[in-house]
Image (tube, one colour):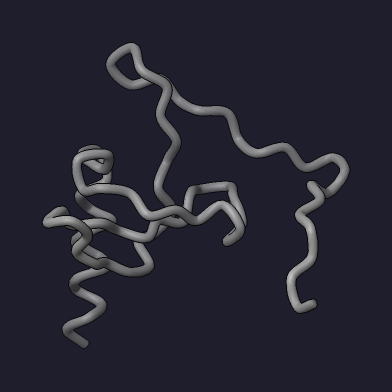
Length: 79
């Protein structure tokens, strides 16, 4: 098989969340892709300090503090 089980490397812990408005949040490193799903805009997010195995599709509503990263993604498409 091409896939192997995930094993965290010793000594490497994912970063802790930061607190924004009394809620725990993780920082967005970059937006990798976008799509529509069930009428909602979704973005494939790479989280700061995490590897691609942790990338996830997130609805735009979850990324209200990462509008700059969304803008960077769209500006990259226009080049």
